[in-house]
Image: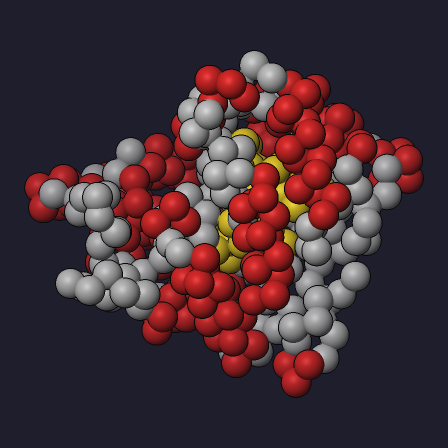
Length: 344
């Protein structure tokens, strides 16, 4: 089912492809904390031009701090900016996780109406004590979300953001088999073994034949939530990553992914893939520890926009910010990004 939100009302197909995606920060104006739409538009176009499509209103995008109207506003703004830049075929993924099944379905409908091509849904963690051990309830939640969503849905497995709820590989694989409107999983649990097990099933040609997707443009992708195992993921038929580092160094992450895939057929590329994975993995670990405020600080340093998160999230302290910028792992990836982007 092609997207209907194309230029001049045209039908535009925006396939969900293996590769790198970036969870885009939501930018806010100083003092008022109102949405900073110009910075969002600039950044979405910047990453997309580097080959990294956006995920809006996710964890990095402070979705929990956004109203329903604000979520729709940033989706509409991003779609308009991408189309204006000639990037009409770049898909938008939008976060649609809510506190209840009812709210989650509403957020998915609103995201689709605003121009999102795909949604990503995390389990609500408020009642994690009741849900974490209830496999039946967890499966029913994602089954119903997918069944009723107007756009394909990615499962978001991030125990750190939902009270420790951690979907196992058996449950995710079952959902992939039984819910044709599910189009992937993001594993921010960082469990490479889990990724390996899921990919071993869904990457087989027989899987697509036996379990066709509702939308042929949306195959079931197995995506990491960090950039430090892109090469290992490729070696077990994983499909890339949705990674916050894609905001800071999109060209570098794309190059690593392309090398990782090519090296499966040409082992002579492995040494360079190993080298680049080391640079990316070290930077990912260092920057992730600085959280959203650290990523925004780096964007401000590199590109002139970033700003602060919404309160109560704190700004990164000046000493910590300077230490982050001067950290050898950060400087290493900044040099690599400048080299690959041609901006020395």
